[in-house]
Image 1: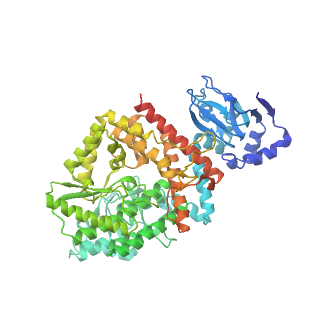
Image 2: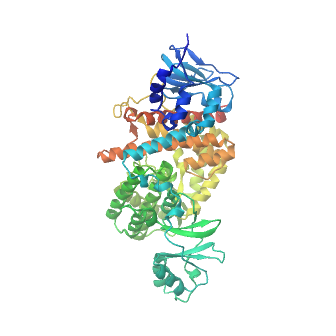
Image 3: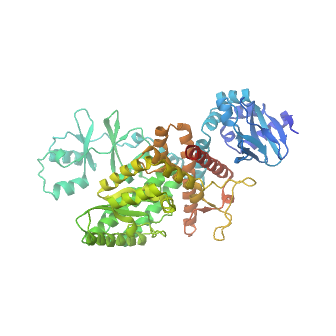
Length: 627
């Protein structure tokens, strides 16, 4: 039997102190929290009792678990979530003023605070912290977690928001720019007078059309013996990458990593307002992307590149400590690893007599998705056009050298042999189409096992070969919904490890007891689902978050759902990075096996929510492909 007990005034202070240990109550003002506490009642539910039944009518109360555990069940009796101290339900139903879809049952003896629905809506209006949490649950929790990480690393307050600062705040001076017809001599004089490393080339209305850097001068002017009377437009880099002046600094770091550039023009309404360099962003850091990128471009030996691979890891640690989000951080790691791989390929292509055929080196797996963490092996392939047997042998020898050099740089050989040096993954454009067509038509276990190969991305060589293959693959997959159903069925076998009695289902593997595999059971459900949705929608993206965003528009999935899925995915990525960072600091080889008992209460709570979001995404797949 349920017993409702109004909170007496003498308990208000103790209740406030207890609630303050949880989000969102820890962020609420003293007045708002007291207002809430004064309107709470306490309800007791013995184990097995139902707290809330599915209904067409909107619920009349908000529940906050005080003690014990509550599990949510579908109408068929399947447990889909478990709630513990500090968690609230049914938020979605209260916000939408609709009935609840799940049944909530006491998994143990439970005490809950209850708040009348009318007071819940009043609190939403009065407390911005409460409103933000209820409408952006997982995103709000993530922000609390990131602030905790920054505190843990004892960073200066100025550094905490470094990468969210608008780029315009980093601009040190007015931009130096000239018109396209300006003679080189005048352009160089302008650079010298301003003591800057680049000059912008703009149209009459101050819109960027090109950029000339000191590096360009050496290669395109001095060594090419171009007269100083020539127009700057003849040697500039045309159509430079730009960013809006109000973009965060993290966007500049990502663009620099992806394109290997060191200066970015800033625009407002299309007009030039400033230029930022990597030095501007990393003014206070010893390690910089500029230094690593320049050193990689000059490296002539694998030994030098091995050292730089360690520097990439050190830079990643620094960015992690400063609170950079996982989406940008994994993309930056991948971007710098791209530069390293490209340099290895460049060195090996110079030392070998490669055949005169069109070829493209493709990144697969996490690198293909721009989602590499601190622990990654090789996944790559080659595609070529019209090569004879001798040409193929030469390409395989070249690929073998590249794979070996990358292994020496700290990127282990793929245990499954998914590498360009394997004849199975060094194929002509026609052969790649035949392989994919066979997988799509037959839907055999090998096709499902190697699904990560569908995440290919061009890295070096003739990129059009890979882009054409991507366009062909998307069309072929869309024409065969049976294959997408088989992929979905296979993906749904990997269920997020949420427990019924305990929070999580932990591994009983002898090598990794009492742990969760954050990759296999954490991020992989999101990666697999995003891949299927992208193929179904014909989206060319390979990055998981971008696949979900672009597929959502094509498949008419609500943006709020996509935002929650991506927030959950990026928290799992962040947790992997933090776990691997901690292992490396202790001199342990990094992996993805985390003991959840090592997490603080907040991160443990977000982890549960992230797994719930994975289940929701899988429910979407099941709805679309298991009819």
